Image 1 (cartoon, one colour):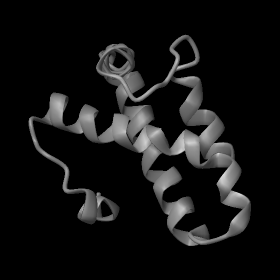
Image 2 (image 1 turned 60 degrees about the vertical axis):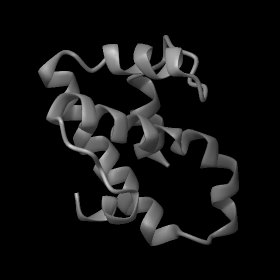
Image 3 (image 1 turned 45 degrees about the vertical axis):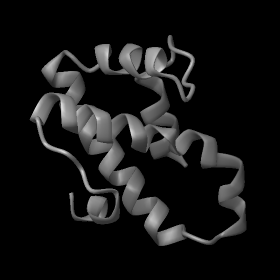
Length: 92
């Protein structure tokens, strides 16, 4: 799960929780365009990995890290001014 570890490093100074404050803090980490582009690439790779392994029981230990997808969706909406349809996110 190297993609997950790599994605979490973007937010290592932030406690990732299901709160508005946590989300805003995470999005503030992505203001730098180079860092944001690297985050996008990492998240897309992570989503592909998750799709390939979906349903595998060993993923249970990593599911909390998949809150990163919510951050990605909020990032996309904030910086691209486009809403990401959760059902179509794999097309990104």
